[in-house]
Figure 1 (cartoon, rainbow, N blue to C red):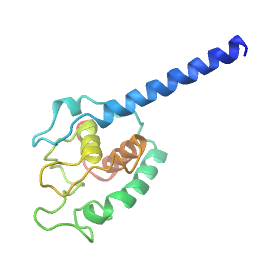
Figure 2 (cartoon, rainbow, N blue to C red; figure 1 turned 60 degrees about the horizontal axis):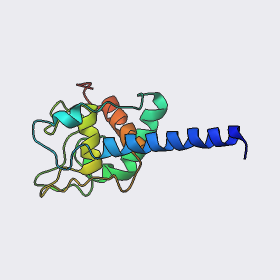
Figure 3 (cartoon, rainbow, N blue to C red; figure 1 turned 180 degrees about the vertical axis):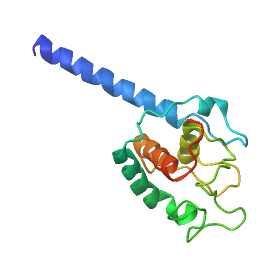
Length: 146
């Protein structure tokens, strides 16, 4: 095996390790949501630019994983939405658990916790899918803190 081949394998391994570190950092930001927001989650920056492709991908992921409760337009009126409490309206300015991209990502990933029916989806989709959902939500809701 040549030196170039060894070097390329080392570079690929480093990229894989760095990618896994990014995913584990963003996924494990917070285990249970905190009313009023979470400073640790708020400090996590969205690594995915809100491009038209990201927003389209986010909408597709949202339709698969979120619309049943939050509704097709994010109003909290999905076909299987619980009634008390009902799911959040994702288009208004009230974000009980924080409005930064990192806080929204943490809720999507980990759920709200406690007796909430909002369960996390980190075992069902990639971190990229969840960040794309954040970008999609920004496109349909208020443009608050990033």
